[in-house]
Image (cartoon, rainbow, N blue to C red; front, top):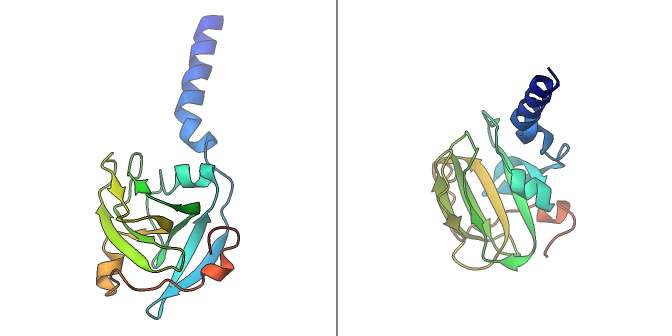
Length: 150
């Protein structure tokens, strides 16, 4: 009986691991690009960046996640355990978009920046294209994000 209970407890903890591993509520900030307002959650810790938008089943309109890196680096994203199709824009320390990639849910394909990035913004797949946002556009409001590269 003890083994059965221990096995059930272990199975329950294993199943709950994605929920237990999630960082607490993330700060939110309003950003803008080409006169479009973006409601972004800020992932500025290792735990928050690792979790990203995993296990989410939807995103609110014009909402996404801003990843803040400690220093400019060659960064890559993947979509393991991410249920929503996303597009990611990698940006330099001034918020200028370097490149944009479309990402399919639940894949382990790497989507990388073309040169060192300080930020990445994940939005619903196609959001950047639908809004005419291309490399070279500048994300405004990063001064409200707090610690991170400037």
